[in-house]
Amino acid sequence: MLSPVKPQTLASLARVLRSKNAGPTLLTIDIFFQDAAGYAQASDSPALSSASVAALYQADPAQVQRHLLPTLLAIKYALPRRLCAGTPGDGDVYGAQQHAPMLGILLGPAR
Image (cartoon, rainbow, N blue to C red; front, side, top):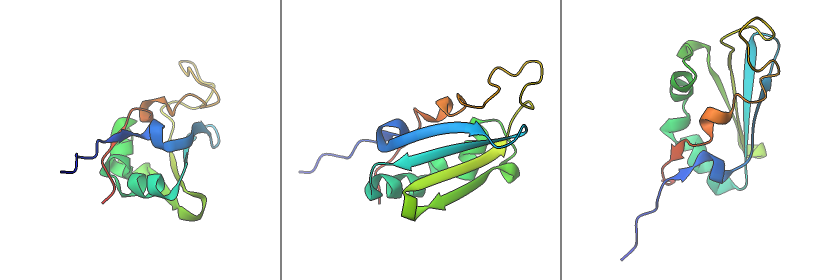
């Protein structure tokens, strides 16, 4: 009897998971996968839909762009920053730590 495949975290499938500013009001999140299987599992997962990422970052879903890049085994998101980079209250001027909420996202097995 086959044992069920356990969900994996995004961090366990990604080779690179990073964020950075795309100007003072936009943030990009880049995810590069180790292999085609991990990319397929992630790109098919509802947990990585534009709507799910918008909810995670408390953003308007209409303002979250998701770009699938299969030849690079990558997914890229562009979304608005909560605060303009460098304004009072901004704790991450470069946007370099904003990928952290995505690390623990659970992805089900590929179909």
